[in-house]
Structure formats: C-alpha cells, structure tokens
Amino acid sequence: MGVSTSARAIIIGGGIGGVTAGIALQQAGIDVIVLERAEELQEVGSGLPLWTNALRALQKLGLAEAIETIGIPVTAGKISNWHGGILADLRSEDLLERLGTISTVVHRAELLATLLNAFDKGKVQLGATCVGFRQDSERVYARLADGQEISADLLIGADGLHSTIRAQLFGAHKPRYAGYTCWRGVADIDGTGLETWAWGKGYQFGITPMTNDRAYWFAQRYTPEGMQDKACGRKCEVLELFNDWHDPIPGVIRATKEEHILRNDVYEQKHLRHWSRGRVTLLGDAAHAMTPNLGQGACQAIEDAVALAACLKTTSDVVSALKLYETLRIRRTNNIAQLASLIGRVVQLGNPLVSGARDEIVKRIPENVLLKILMWILEYETPDLQPGDAQTPGRELQKRSIVQSETLEA
Ligand SMILES: Cc1cc2nc3c(=O)[nH]c(=O)nc-3n(C[C@H](O)[C@H](O)[C@H](O)COP(=O)(O)OP(=O)(O)OC[C@H]3O[C@@H](n4cnc5c(N)ncnc54)[C@H](O)[C@@H]3O)c2cc1C
Image 1 (cartoon, rainbow, N blue to C red):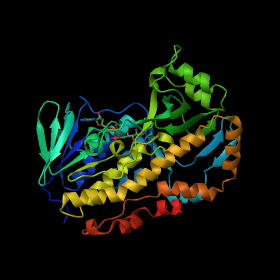
Image 2 (cartoon, rainbow, N blue to C red):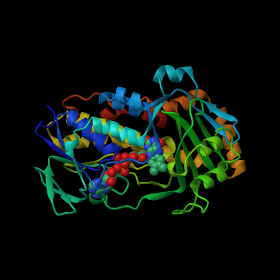
Image 3 (cartoon, rainbow, N blue to C red):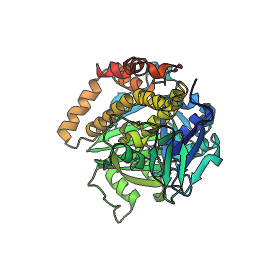
Image 4 (spheres, helix red, strand yellow):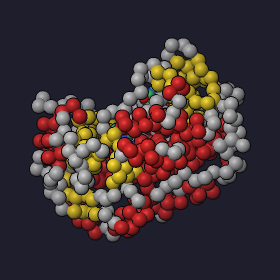
C-alpha cells in the first residue's frame, strides 16, 4: 500500500540525518540516492549522546546492537552548581526502570561509520552540490552545480543549517546567533562516574563517559558572534574559564589534547509552519536547527528519518505521505527547539543574584516534575502507522504520537 517499490528518493546531504533517512527509506523498499557536496562523508570529532528517543528510533532500523558496540550507556545524571552543590539528581530508580538507559554516548565519526555500514554506499554520490530543484505533478528534479539534473519521485532536503532546499521552499532566512559559543572536547580519561552538568557564572559545563577510556565534554558561554581563539589556544582559554569549577572539570579539560577541542558559535533557525511542498520535504537541521541545550538536534533528525519511512509506507501517494510526515513531526520538533532555547537562557544566567535564585528554585522542583519533562522527550516513539493514515485528520494523529507534548503544554 506504500509508495511503489520502484519509487526513487533523492536525499540532499549525507550527515547523520541524511544517512539515517537513507537507511530507513532503503528498508522501506525505496531506491535512494544521497547527494553530498563534500568529497568525503565525515563527522566532526566529538561525542554525541544518543538519548533514549533516538535509540528507540535506531532500534526500529535494527541498529541497536551496532550502537551498543560503539557507545557507553549512561544511567544517571545530576545537575550541580559550579562549585559542586547538587541542584538535581536524576539517579532515580523510576527513570532507570522506565528507560533502562538515559542515553548512550558515541563518537560522532564512529556513529556515522556505523550508519554507513548499514547503507548501500554505492548509493552515495560525493562532490555533488545541489543548487536547487524543480517539480511537476509526476517527478522532482534536483539540479547540481555541474549542470546535471537527477529526477526522482521525492526529494528530501537533509542539507543542514544553511539548507538550499529550505531556502527554495520557504525563503532564505539567516540562522539566528543564539549568543553563545560552545566548546566540545574528547578527553583521554576514563569518564565512568564523572557525569555532570554544572551551571554557573553565565557558563555551563557537561561531562559524559565514552568508550575506550574517553570522556566527552562541552562548555558554553555568552560571547560576541565570530570571536576567535585566544592567543594561548583553545585548551588554555577553556581552562582559564573553568579552572576554579568543581572536580573533575579542570582535570577533564587538562586531559584533552588541544586538537581534540572544537569551537562553534551556536545558531538556531526560525521555526517553520510547514516542511513539505509537493514532492519535496525537509529533515534534520534543514527543518529544525536548534540550540544544543537539550542535546536533541541529531536525535530529532534520527526520529525524523524513521517517521518519514513510516509515512511513506502508508500510501502510494508521495505528496500525501510527505504531508503526513510534516503533521507528525513539526509540532514536536518546534516544541523541543523552543525548550532547548529557553534552557540555554536559564542555565547561562550571568547575574549572580538571579542565578542564585534560579539554583534555589531548581533544588525545590520535585523530581517528578523534572522527570515529566524528560519523559516527554525521551519516551517518544514513532507511532506504528497504518495504510490509510494519510487520510486521518492531523489532530487525531497528533494525539496518537505526541500525547506527552500536549501534557507538557497543559
Ligand atoms: C556545538 C553543537 C553541539 C551539538 N550537540 C548535540 C548533541 O549533544 N546532541 C544532538 O543530538 N545534537 C547536537 N547538535 C546538533 C547536531 O549536530 C545536528 O542537529 C545534526 O548534526 C544535524 O544533522 P543533519 O544531518 O540534519 O545536518 P548536517 O550534519 O549539517 O549535514 C548536512 C549535510 O548536507 C551537506 N550539504 C549541505 N548543503 C548541501 C548541498 N547544497 N548539496 C549537497 N550536500 C549539501 C553537508 O555537507 C552535510 O554533510 C549539536 C550541534 C552543535 C553545533
């Protein structure tokens, strides 16, 4: 009943979102081609927590075991202030019972390699920059920078923050600078038991364990856009900022090689009211680039990929399937992006009086309230869709798939 097995999809972009979508669509019997502008498929050298919601989506693709071999499960989490006072402890039995693990932390490059192992690499075209598309009632045509045109039944823009496909569909919007820089590092230190998320002085710092005696960390602080590294180097700058923070933070920074520290200004995109037009849709950062404060950007891209394949199985009409996908995904991802943005502002409050008051409030928030917010994100599972669901009213579908987000809004 789904789109024809002779259907062809073009995915623009071979990042985590594009490749996961490639796997999901291939498994749905669709002939997929991934067009990637880079000469090589690669990810940046940092850690990535795959939260339970992303793990559940990857499980649907049969990748749970492969992820286990490259990841370390995280079963506890705590929020502290910068000198180590506990603000919230999420070592809850309830949490573990419900989720098993909270997240599995992987190295991004190792994740991409694992995804590529599950994908037919012959279907990736490198050095292929898409400059736009055109569509009619029968086909969609991707235009490449070298003048080539490739046709398919559907086209998915998984081309990231500065998406060409998004710009053509809904107009070009410059990504909004969130106001802060993020450093990410991989330390050569056994990260077991070092999990922390520390808030203070207008900054934040997080640590999670990784495989092979490594620890992934991130640090964020407000800076003007485009600031460069200090003359003493990245590691020295981060150490200067966090030297007096609680253990093990300074030690973890010291255990990181200069070349294993990344620095990025953080951007987010304006929320869209639609993702799909005709035979073209968006996925991952192209659809919903968000700040990293909830660690959900890539996780949502993975959820998108599984949802898109599920929608394509419900109807032979591509246009209706893409509308169904938009209906399923847009509200959840916009809500998560909004929450991530808010959390960034709260966590990085600079004024000591205000941040002190915030800490007191967080300490008093009952654990079950924190859990409710977490569960809304982590317990999500793409609903099993049935043939004919493309005709189901959007409101009903949302009730089935994002009940928890409605609970939160209430
Ligand atoms: C500092 C920072 C920390 C983060 N931390 C987390 C985290 O902890 N957890 C989490 O889940 N997410 C996190 N994210 C977000 C996460 O990195 C992104 O959401 C995710 O990588 C998006 O994947 P994507 O495949 O949609 O896009 P991308 O990874 O951007 O991939 C897009 C691909 O498209 C290609 N491309 C672009 N334009 C074209 C074109 N015209 N033609 C052909 N190819 C094209 C690009 O070369 C690229 O390979 C973080 C992001 C940042 C910046």
